[in-house]
Image 1 (cartoon, helix red, strand yellow):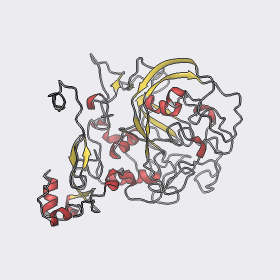
Image 2 (cartoon, helix red, strand yellow; image 1 turned 135 degrees about the vertical axis):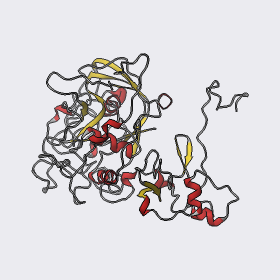
Image 3 (spheres, helix red, strand yellow; image 1 turned 120 degrees about the vertical axis):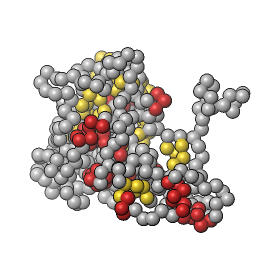
Image 4 (cartoon, one colour; image 1 turned 180 degrees about the vertical axis):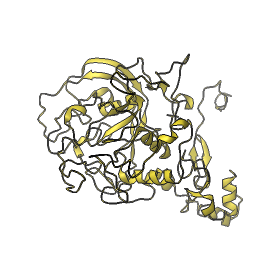
Length: 447
């Protein structure tokens, strides 16, 4: 209450604080849920169990394999929250220690970890700048919002020697600027999605998981409606549609599909590639993965904003130093050969995610240039639609290109190509959403 005005009264315009959740519950969409047993938020907000499955222990399991529910679990599954007068046995059974600290089932850290990293191991909990370590591969870093130009020519430093010194921004500022855009703060994963993380998604898909229709929106924007759809033909303002049920059949991450010619990092069983970036992924699978993992695909404006350092309008994500030939800034042009076992060409291979230490962008994300191309949310257009305020180009009927079908936006360059696709303002090759090549992705998340 403030001056007699309640935050629940929409005419007051006062935001309500998020609820304080008892018993180790977590906040999803401003409500308390038990992520141990909620089939619509199983282990992580927005992770929905497939038909015929239920949520137990923060994992989706088949109803036939589910253990009998205790009284506490029945209460949680029904949405009842025991009050402070509940007996100690019921509280302990629900995962809450009697001393007030979370029990093993209610551990806050495990509930905040996206499902792709929960099993732990290579490619999940063994990432770090430099390509190895014990950092979570699901680390997500905040990108502070602002305004920038989507089209620009950076001013390159005359002291551009390629020495391992990070220049925070191009000297003098950009020229030929056009197509301004404003982007609200969001989180963007530090690392590209690894083979190890994608393997967990494949397992969920094999068990029957599919995205819910309308999921995958930037729900922190516009009262949950998401990005403004500048490709909408509807009268008034349109918003991103989220996942379409008609796209379910486009998800097919089989061993055969994930082993596309000459570029594949996937292996049918876990092996030494788990910390490499996944590639050979169709756009639909990238989008579905991010939904399953509690996030969404970044828009083109968000992706370029992070790579350009926002208003710093960098030449490359790390600044204006030439990427050189020593893998300090980016993995590109077949210069990384440390693995020596990469099929089919050990002379041209990707690196474990996060290997180029000096290639971090302004907000800490690694491999924003080189390594593998990255899928973005938008459909491709030869020109930007203005104005753009938290926008995406998502027409219901995307335009056919002169030489082929509609394409989704790809950015960032890859391990086999030269520097041409790596500048922050550069678009990648035109790719239809069903294509499988050296294209991977990373997820964005609500701030």
